[in-house]
Length: 261
Image (cartoon, rainbow, N blue to C red):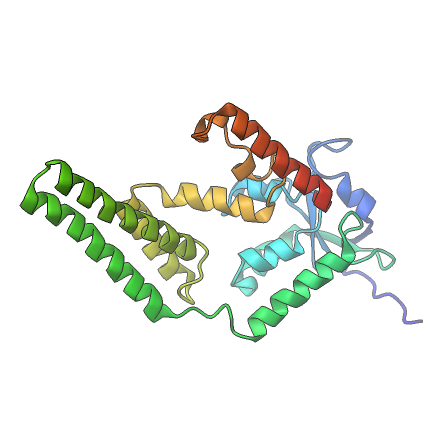
C-alpha cells in the first residue's frame, strides 16, 4: 500500500462531512468552504470580492466546485494565484475525490464527455461565422430604420420595419450569448468588449446583468433558490401566474428526481 502524502505545512486533512457543515448555514453560519481538485478553500471573506459575483460562489459553499471552476476559468494559472492564499487544507486520503452526495458515475461520464469534446476541437469557434453574423445584424438594423426613413411610419412600412428589427434583435441575442460565454475569441477581453457592444448598444440591455444571472444559471442549473432562471416572478410569464407556478414546480420536480443539490 502506498503511504498517503502528507499535506503541506499549516494545512489540515478534512472530511466531506466537515466541509459540508461550512456552507454558511447550520453549526458554522459564518464559515464557507469549498473543494477544488481535492484542495479545500475558505471563501468566508473572499466570496464578497469574487469577480463573478458573491451568489455564484456561495452556491458552492460546503460542496465540490471542481467542474464549475474548470468551466468558468479559462486562465487557471492566473486564478490559482488568488486561490493559493485561501487554501486551508486538503481532503483526507480516505475521502473520495467526488462528493458523496453526487452520482459518481454521472460526474465521471460528464468529465469524460467534456474531455472528448475538447479533444475533437468542437469548442473551437469559427470566427468568420461570427463576423458575418454581426455584419448581418448591423445590415438588418440599418434596413429597419431606412424603411421608416424612406417610406414613413404608415402601417405597412411600420410592420415591415418591425419584422426586420425583430429578426435582428433575435439574432443579436444569440450572438451576445456566445460572446458572454467567452466562446468567440481566445482572449477574454475581446469577448467582453464585443459582448458589451452587442448587448448594450444593439439590444439595449446590461451586459453585466446578463453575465451575472447567466453565470448563476450555469453554475447550478435547475437548482431552486440557486438558479435565477427558475426563481423568476410569475409576472415575467405572459401566460400568467398559474403557468408560472406549474412550470417552476415541474423544473423543481425534475431537479429533485435527477438528484441535484
